[in-house]
Length: 187
Image (cartoon, rainbow, N blue to C red; front, side, top):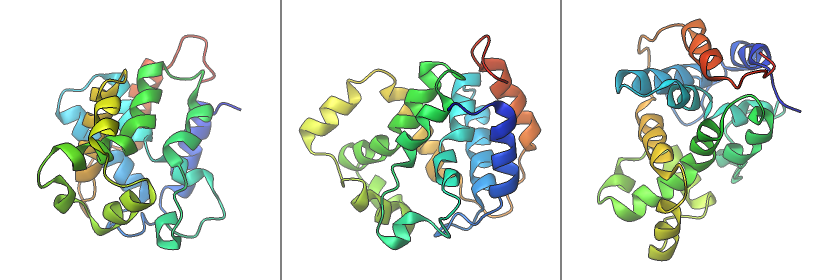
């Protein structure tokens, strides 16, 4: 069942204040900071929306008290979310979200020093998510459609962990998301 934008807003407002365990921000702060970084870089509405929603899959599990990585679990949040957004947003939004974890694996393989720049929780989740790509895996990832969008999203994701960073309100980014929602989608 696809989510509506009103349901996404409710989810972010009611569950977004949960701590992003292992990071010094809440889930909502992380989402808003990711969207802000995308906006500041001049990204279009689709990538700003992907940045806002990329970790929403973590909020779908109401029973989870903390980040699954602390329990040694990869919750596959990047894929879990996609069925809930399909029919609401175009493929570029969905594929940037779906690829943001593999983008971390690619960046670790291809950019010297990237792995060492990751937070402790991102390094822990990297191991659970399959680890650093082999050369063959890296080549396959970068050849995928929307790989570049996933890489951009990943870099914003990494930086969006600043305590008390001022951002525009959620309404600002939801308006951007409404602007790139598919025609006829449940808004």
